Image (cartoon, rainbow, N blue to C red; front, side, top):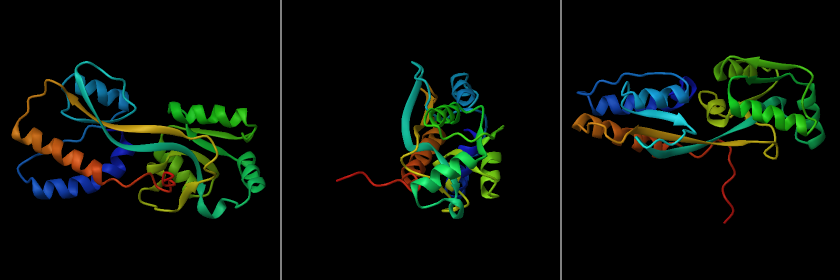
Length: 208
């Protein structure tokens, strides 16, 4: 899995699974979602937890849980009124991981809304973006689960009406995988934990 995805998914999964499956060794392999997908195809790893994967005839893809990339900031910096939110965005800086497609798409969308500040800070990864936002450096773009883990409620969505991009977190494996007892138990454990993942932090429930 990607490091930032693993940072909120793996701790609780491994603490529970390793205590119940003492005879199974787990090796963690990190990379971009595209790299993880390719590693599964090349049989370098048994399972991949990936974001928005492209389908492949040799892969089984199972929806694990949703996420969304959004504009976030430290809670105490977010105004309550629309004029204050616009001023916060235009003041900046806007911090985002430049190599993440969804972040760049939201930057483009904010530009189209005339809400981009003059100062943009492009970082190398999501974790550095998160650290800068927690320090109050500015407003940023992050997956909502990445923003929330370890600091629940400190980073919040600036305004739900601002552009967001939905993400699909998917568990994948090869269709022809050798299904040993350990493989089957690990797959079940991963899917069980995915089912326990809470709804997107701060997401409004669907209308009834």
